[in-house]
Image (cartoon, rainbow, N blue to C red; front, side, top):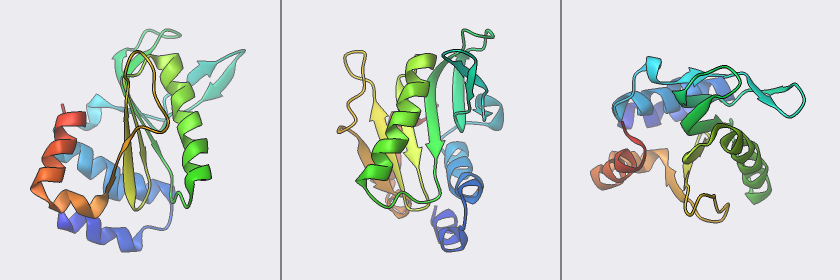
Length: 148
């Protein structure tokens, strides 16, 4: 996993986080590109359209989509306020799509929120630095949480 992390130094925008970190990691833990939809158009409220970065659908019926996992990517989350704002964003998608797992990722870290008692607690998450996945125990722990 070292190769992916080393590319981290060259990451300058959100799309590079997706291409160089998120997508290789998803493939490593057993997913294929056909397992997710990037920028899924989702109706929220009265015609408002939103686009979760990655949706892992269990039902793709138009207007009634459901996803077991959502991933929201950012270039860099520099403080708790930005993490909180990003959580609100992915949480609202999660409510609409009945997600069980919410993931936030930036160039340095990945935050995993697991649904408990039919809701998410914004203060309860597992945070990993991408570099930690060089450690087989951290990698396997995350694969158990998210993997296919």
